[in-house]
Image 1 (cartoon, rainbow, N blue to C red):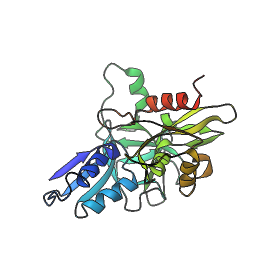
Image 2 (image 1 turned 30 degrees about the vertical axis):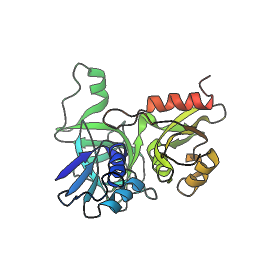
Image 3 (image 1 turned 90 degrees about the horizontal axis):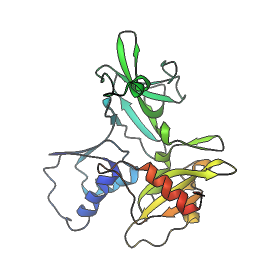
Image 4 (image 1 turned 90 degrees about the vertical axis):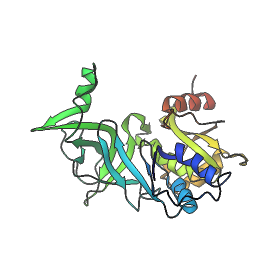
Length: 268
């Protein structure tokens, strides 16, 4: 049996069940669990593997427009980022020239080959997302990434959600992974809130585990300081009863930004 799900939002409830009311359930028929659509954090992945060590766990990357692009490498995690061994049809390109970026340079992920013709009745979005190089049609994804000399792609996050704080770019997914590695954090979203000095500051919206002790900003910053560069560490904290996500488990960043702004007094 193989199971497909969407990142932490679906894997965490499964962990809670296997470690709680379903403890001791025979999972011998379960061969693999495949995640895509949202990043599976390293801490959640490790927790699941400790409960069912014989199950193959695949952390995949792709999109509705491109389909499957690749699977996370074994060394993917908080220290090195979300590293993906991509297929031969995937590249990291300059979003203006569409030429491949040099190793270490930030670009956007693109895929050639079997891609859609466009979006129905939306020529503007189609023009922004699809392009041709020679005889091949490509789709330009919204994900920013770098590529190394061996062709391994490190996914940074969605360009549309990038937080510019004092000229430094922070991708929420990286900070969320660090936050979710805290033992008292059940779920997390990160958004930028207005800041007079820096333009935007990084704000964390957290859902704590049931029965967890109160968590303050200082404790969150101390935890993140061992995992993130200083400018990526949250400067504001809001504790929510529950993190809001789409029915499929994807992050609702519009909600997170509104909650962070209201909770920090940055909404005016």
